[in-house]
Amino acid sequence: MRTVSLLPAATEIVGVLGLMDQLVGISHDCDFPAEANTKPRVTSCKMPGNDIASRDIDAWVTEQVQQGADLYTLDECLLRELHPELILTQKLCDVCAPAYGTIAALAATLPGPPRVINLEPTTLDDIFNNIRTVAVAMNASEIGTRVLQQLHDRVEQVKSRLAQTTKRPRVVLIEWLDPLFCSGHWTPELIEIAGGIEVLGGKWQHSVRKTWDDVRHADPEILIIACCGQTESRALRDWNRIKSQPEVASLPAVQSGRVVITDGNAFFNRPGPRVVDALEYLARIFRSFNRNPKGSASRV
Image 1 (spheres, rainbow, N blue to C red):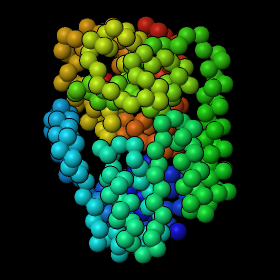
Image 2 (image 1 turned 45 degrees about the vertical axis):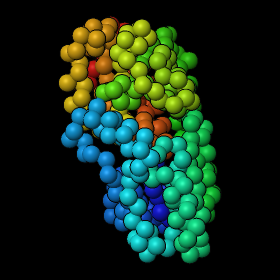
Image 3 (image 1 turned 60 degrees about the horizontal axis):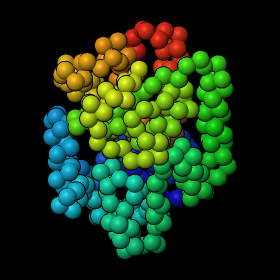
């Protein structure tokens, strides 16, 4: 099944299924598993690089969206040369991948034409269903069943440990620092399963813009920074710049050192198999908090 993935999460799903040999093309953003980096890239990004401030990136994206401009360039000639039978993409967020309508229209002109699958999860179950969908589409149903069983078993292990939890910490997970966006979609659900309470973001809802005053009123015991599309070191750059601002520095979680900076790009923002890694990571943070509620959770 000659497959093109236009979504990092989809590439990771193909990887966990052990089907990377069937992947003939990827997006500019696909970087895991490592074998993905050997594949032809059929998209490029017009977005400014990570060397500029997050506020400037947000302003640029907002302007482009308001103007109806595409954020990505699709290499149509290369896509035709690859002769895909299957294209994996999404409708969830036009900021995260090329617009679905553009991909579907182009696919209709290709030989075959290739099947276009929309992966648009909101919940953890949706993510697992996406894995099943890709496995079936790539004629690997049995492999998909085994992979899903392993992921479900890991989730159940986290849930079983939760029975021993004495306290659920109040948590705010931030998906963008400047301007500030709360968590959404599956992330508050992960926090809940792991033993915390997301007090700002909405479970199965879109991530929305908030203020540091909103964070103060939510009064989290733990603040987790997992910025969309950013590594831990990139998010740390923004955090170091804003953490001394009065409205941030005065937060009890900040004063107590209960701030965790993590790789949102790898674990939280991509709806693929590594969200279970994120779940286990959260569970470790919350267990540590329960052992020492007054201690530091900071990796800064």
